[in-house]
Length: 145
Image 1 (cartoon, rainbow, N blue to C red):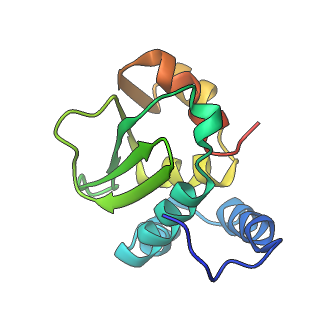
Image 2: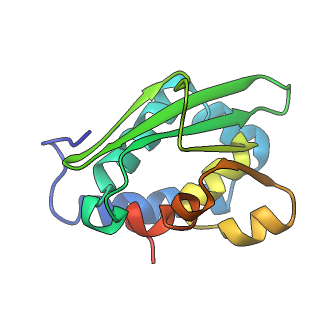
């Protein structure tokens, strides 16, 4: 989902602000802010707006994020990728191409670029289910090097 209110350069500034906030925040603070309904909506909408269909290699389908709080609650979001862009919504897709399961605070760190997805996977902080080939392209598909 794209937003007409984004100004040129605003996305880069937003990424820097998010990274700085995440770098100085503990898990509880990340859960209260980024993990709130509004915080997750902002992060997932920004993520969907960064989706590059050209980098997706023809992939269309759903990506499900299962974000676990310290209290054990799971907050689920779906990003639907199409040939013309992506949208994000709260809730689970019934048959996603990829499901990512991780702590909500670690998701915030991934979104901010403070946690490497490969390192998180190897350390057991991130679980992947589904099409691993799609999972390896997620960073590229959403504007990360």
